[in-house]
Amino acid sequence: MLSRRTRIALAVLVVASLTFVILDLRGGDGPLSSARSAVSAVTGVLQKGAATVFSPVTSAGDWWSTWRNQASQIEELRAENSELRTLVRESQNDRARADELDALLRVATVGRYRVVPAEVIAVGPAQDYAWTVTIDAGSLDGIERDMSVINGDGLVGRIIKVNQTNSTVLLLVDASSSVGGRVATTEEIGIVSGTGRQDSLDFQLLDPLAELVIGDALVTFGSRDGRPYVPGVPIGEVVDITGTAGQLTRIATIRPFANVSRLSVVGVVVRPPREDPRDSVLPPRQEEQATVEQPEEQQPEEEQPIDETAEAPVDDGATTQTDLQSDPQVDE
Image 1: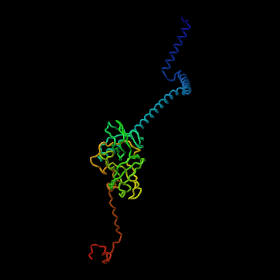
Image 2: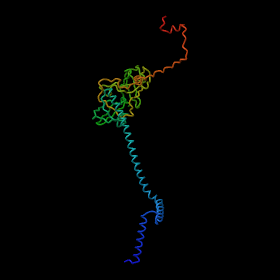
Image 3: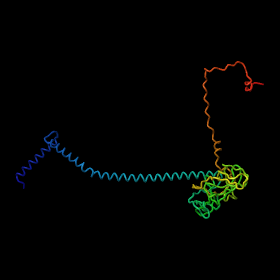
């Protein structure tokens, strides 16, 4: 049991506490407003000091979280960038292959060749040959030995080995390769031989006196039953001639139309045309393209203003001998 004095002290404290609470709830400038303001000021100063002291510690966690988020975003952006670059390269490759396939189909359509499209999957020497490539078409696709191989630019070579799913192509530029060629302009025939260089062929006319000029285009003469070469396929153009007409050593240098160092899509001719396409597969020359182009419309000449101040010539009625000769309406 609490003593009487203790109970009286507690009662006084409770009454005082209630009195202070009632005065504080009423607001205004009461007896406690000054004390409350002082306590608030001291508390604000303490809070500001604590925030200043502990802000590096509290912000370290936020900085670490932000840094991790930024690092994660950077990695995601790098992955997306790499994926986009891959898609761009694949898209460019797909467009290039589509363009090559379109050019191949154009040649096959004009020349009436039945072809099996294929893609070059390997490059390198094979057997006794230095210039060969491997394509992804074989006997299961109807490919046989000694079939012509072309692309959108012209003759590439011939098939020398066939497996079920792939075949080996001897390129036209190989030193052991030779094909009958015909000059498009003069119909003269000769032998086109590989030189072992990717940008050069040799051409020797059967008639040493036949006419041959730089810029002449050559097409294949054709073989029996179209094996190994079908007729009318563009080979290349003459870029140089050594020797003069009549010499047996007269050799022309031919630049092949097909770039064998950049082969991708090719076509194997599985059926030759019924008729020789002659020179129809050759692309038109620049001169022919220029003549086909329509001339630009000529702008009408601007009318010259009439100078009213100029004096008109005076006709004195005298006609000179020069006037008589220049006027066709005057009878002699």
